[in-house]
Amino acid sequence: MSRPAQLAALLLALGACSGSTEPSDFTVVWEDDFTGAAGALPSSSNWGFDVGTDWGNAQLEYDTNRPVNAQLDGAGNLRIIARQESWLGRAYTSARITTAGKREFKYGRFEARLKLPTGQGLWPAFWLLGANVASVGWPQAGEIDIMEARGQEPTVVIGSLHGPGYSGGSALSRRYTITSGRLDTEFHTYRVDWSAERVRWYIDDRLYHEVNKGDQPGNWVYDHPFYIILNVAVGGNFVGAPNGSTTFPQEMVVDWVRVSQGAK
Image (cartoon, rainbow, N blue to C red; front, side, top):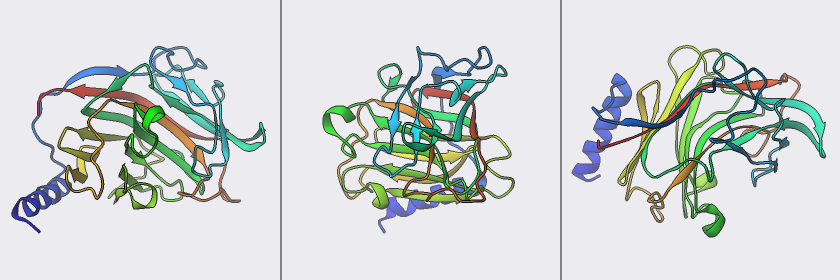
C-alpha cells in the first residue's frame, strides 16, 4: 500500500473509532421535513413515484403511487409502507419515491433521519442514482447507496458504490454494525459526503466507509448530477423472500431529508 493510501486508511479508521467528522462549511441547499396533513402524499414539487415492479432485482412488491404506501403522518414524518396484499399480480405493495427531474445535485452532503422496517425479506434504501440513467443505462450512470439494510439484520447498515465494472455483487461496499440499539426501534441519521475526489459514508456522524477516486476497478462516473430515491422493497436477491416470521405492514419512517453543499 502506498504512503498516501496508508494515511487515508488510518484517517478512516480514526474517524470510525472516534465518530468525528471533518470541519466543513456546508450550507443546506434543499430539504424536506415532510410537514403536511396526515394521509397526504409527499410534496409533488420534490417527489415523484416510480410505479411498477422488480426493477431488475427480483423484488416481489408492486410499487404504487397510493397514499396507503407513502403518506405524511401529520407529525412531520413520511411513512413508506410495505403491505401484504394482492395488487396487479403481486402479493405485496410498497412505494419508491424519487426526486428525478425535480431535485438533482452534483456533489454535496446528502443525509436523512430514518427509522427502518424489520423482518426477513424487507429491504429499505436511501440512495442516489445518476440523472443520466435513461441515456447511458445502469451502472454507467452510477449509483451511491447511502443506506441499505436487510430487515433480518436490524443492527447492520450497508453503504455501497456501483459503477461500470463494480456493480451488483461486485459493488464497493462496507457493512457496519451499530454498537448499541437497533435500526428499527430508533431513528438514525444516514449520510454521504460526495466530492469530485471521494465518497464517504456515515451513520450518526460516524465515518465507516470511504472510496477515493482511483480506488475503483472501472471508470469513476460520479461527476454529474444525481437524484435521490427512498424505497422499501419486499424480497429480491439482496434479502430473500419474506417468511412466516415477517409481519406486515412494515414502515420506513422518514423524519427529514437534506442536501448541503459548499467548500470543504
